[in-house]
Image (cartoon, rainbow over all chains, first blue to last red; front, top):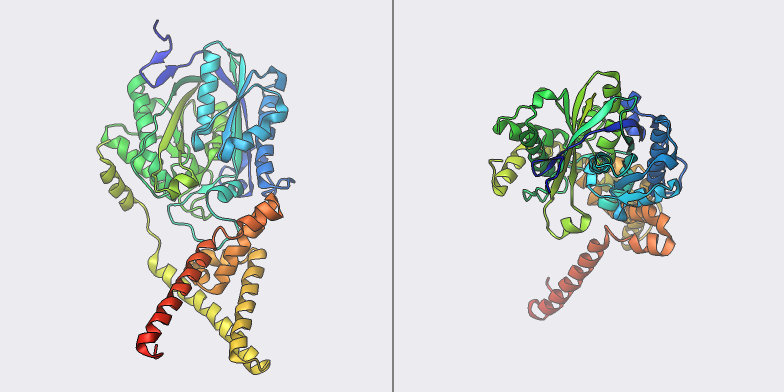
Length: 339
Length: 153
């Protein structure tokens, strides 16, 4: 029996699935960046009245989800499924953040690509007729990520030039089956394969993830026969300055030109010159907040009519790095259009 | 992609900006030097001002510098200096204080026993283990060689 919506091995066509609303909450540093006005809430500090940063990050997911659902004129009881994950061990920001919401929960992990993985899974579920409304949410927090992956905040260490700054941010998107006021639909999803080119430097994640982004983007264009220029904008999650440059070159070598309509969310959320973030932003909240804030607003206003959003993730852990392992990358793509 | 793993790694190396070596070295030199000058100043104060014996003064200087390192860490100042100074703040004893105080502060949220106390040595642990072990080994070598060299070492 053939799979009706299967286009090639990695891509699925999505019909009748729309993004009803979205919400983005970010921290102070992001609130001082170029996209400051596009976020729903900018936190006054790292704590947001919570005792630990982990609790803060949980609160961000919970409030972003609530806000997105409210903006869609829905209630929490209307949402059939919620997909979430984050960078912390056992995805506690998701689990503890969403436990009060009472929505059937799928915990997922795609590292910094989690937002797009969530939207992909929600789209598949809704497109296949298994549910009517779903939320995809994710978060990251600079302090919780540093504690887990790197060093205590007060420690006097230096960051390398290729290092990226974990975004304190949460993005939530409400998807529904059937047309809605926003007029913004999901048209395709392309699921990435894990790509590992043997990069061992955990401080150069952009460079480690670029091959995965290249693989997924190339596959998307090949399987759908869509041209890069058919999208007003193509974004990656957090390749940073170095990874973004590499991605353009890798695709160019295969005759795919994205140089004119491509940006990286890690380079959009901060002012690279002014804000001392080295190679740019990273974290689940990077594409989470940029997509659910700025990019959704661009789509809603019609400034852009079509978007290929490619979340990029580095599937390492502190343990794997210490054991001398390289950094495997993953990239998921979701095609969104005004219909 | 036209690259093998090895080729991609070389390609990435080329693309990645290296640290600005000269600037980093100069910053480390000057800040590290200033910290040592401060240490020396305390030494002079303790020997001349407080008339401590040299041995005692050295200990007093270590205590003072560790205190200052810990204080500046607690005030969230040490990390800001270290961002520029790199090795200059890492190498002196103040860096050691910072390496112990920063995880102690950070992990207090997980409790005083299993958080603060257990995690306090995550960064400085290797310094203690290998530093003390090395000194013990040197002591053994010294002892053995003293039978041959006649104490001239």
